[in-house]
Image (cartoon, rainbow, N blue to C red):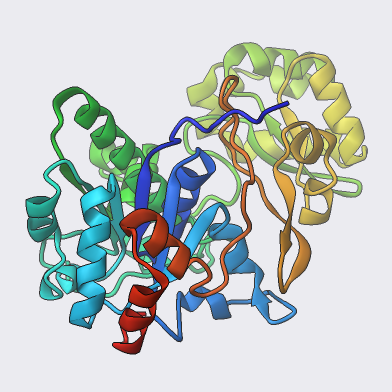
Length: 398
């Protein structure tokens, strides 16, 4: 059966990004069918090519984030490299970059210049602090985004030090945000023909994701502190100790709490101090030990089964070895897929979280080797001959 084209089939993206936030955005565009051309510095390429874990010397970090992309090298510090890039921009729909603000302008390739040759261009820029503001020239890394946004200040355990999340969440949020902005701008272009620049910062993206944490301070003046695994707005909504590890119980409203009371069968849960969510949040230090008196005598699976049987959300706290074998996550939802890389060999990478009924995402191509498709791209997109390719190569364009 012929495989359906992706939703973004026919859309051309020039990907100038490195490491995580930008490549994550362009990975999503590529997974949805866009023709993403990854442009890297000759000889070195994306810094992520050297990030662990390595498989046969190749970075699995890079392979995961750059699947479904074609790859070429281009030296944008040379006039020949800039000339080729401008020619590619004329035919492209989207350009994405995550340089420090001002770098592309100094190269003569910023949005103000590129829109002169392609007025309909969508230009996405993701950086640590955004294109303007007093901090715009500061270097932006994920841990900086987590620290500056306030996320670290509320992550961890009461009395402990501010803690970085287990993944580079500011980078991922920045990547998702610029992807959303690009798609909105592209939808507008389909209606109006207008181009657009999308300016996203890691810090802004993480501040936005703090949602209720911001509102607690804005509305009450209280500075939120680390709370462990409990939630500031709902109780019980936390991890609890079982015989063989931790289990999550998420009684997100009064109805669910009342059901949980019938499962646990402890009269202490009927106390007036737990009557209503606001009181349960306020008196949570009294509530959690009562629930743990029940969970400690049972295994994780027993707690989960008893809760789910009555409709109370519950879950084991999975380690990754369990996640990659989970019949729902790994099998039904295909969140881990295999790819054949010419050097790394056959490896598993993370699947795409977007599921479409009519135009499913697919793995069409493994991540490119450095410069793998340069000549093909110049031939297909710009009509260059092999002789022209060799001439530009001789001049150091790629």
